[in-house]
Length: 253
Image (cartoon, rainbow, N blue to C red; front, side, top):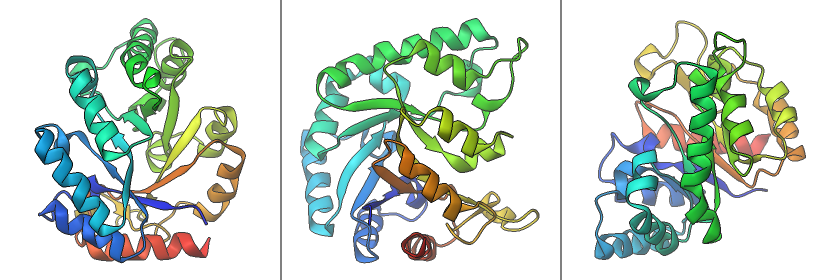
C-alpha cells in the first residue's frame, strides 16, 4: 500500500495547524503536504519546530507547495525549508487570475519561467513541477491548452495532477494521465460532490463519497511515475471526517 498524504491546506480553517498534523498521523497518514501560507513566514527556529511536530505525529512532509513569488524571490529560504522538513518534491500550485497569460505565447513563456524557477531545486536534488487547477484546460484562441503549453516549454517539469480540477476544467483525466504518464510524480486525490450537494463545501466531497471514479483512476496511475498520493478537500466542514473517511476509502480501492 502506498503511503497516503494529506494536504494540510485542507485543514487551514481548523487551527492550530499542529492539531491537524496530529490528526493526520492519528488516522493513518504517513505523509503530509505543506503549503506556502503555513511556512512562508517561519524563521529557522520555526521551521525546526514544525519539523519536530511532524516527527512527533509520525508523518513526513514529503512534498510542499510554494508560490511562484516564493520560488523566485526567496529561493534560498525555500530551499532551506524544503531541506529541513525532509521534502523530496516541490510543486508550484497556482497563479493568480490577474497574472495568468491570455494567449499561447504567454503560457509558453510561463512554462519556461517555471523551468527556470525550478532549476535551483532540481540542482539540490528535489523533484520539481506544476500543480494544476481547472483554468489550464480551457482552450485558448488557437485551440491549444495552457496545460500543454506549460509542459512543452518546461521539459524538465513534473506534474502533480489534481484529477478533480482536471474534471472541473472539462477534460478527461484518463486521457491526460496516459499522455503525461512519464511526467506525473504526484497525485491530488480529491472528489466532487453530486450536482447540487455540498454547496457549503465548494461542491467537493470526501474521497470515495463523490462522483469521481477513483477505483478506475487508481489503477491508471500504476502506469505513471506517481509516488505521492495526496488527499485534499478545499473546504471541508469537518477536517476529522474528511481525513478519516478519505483514507478509509483509499484503503478499499
